[in-house]
Length: 126
Image 1 (cartoon, rainbow, N blue to C red):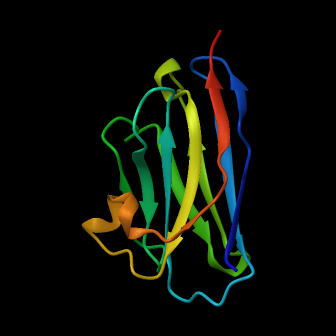
Image 2 (spheres, one colour):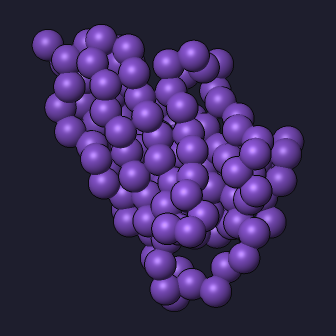
């Protein structure tokens, strides 16, 4: 059973920074893409960022481009989301996802991912 566990969420002031982590365990996955999605209260889940299985290519939603950076450490089976210049509209539950089949351009689509974490709350407020 593939397991994804997110951490690093919390309360931060506007303009501040947080770094989320997602560890993938109990798996036999190889060459899997990873992504972050988020869901704010009353809104649909939306794409935030993704990284290809090689780690070479990254993809971002326009709303976070230039502020968020996604990376991965394949040896540690871990993905990261560095979030800078946080805004109140970044408040949401952030979910990590993984799948071997996710490829560009569909890598931005939630339906491409079979494996999901439970989510970590990010609140941006003064």
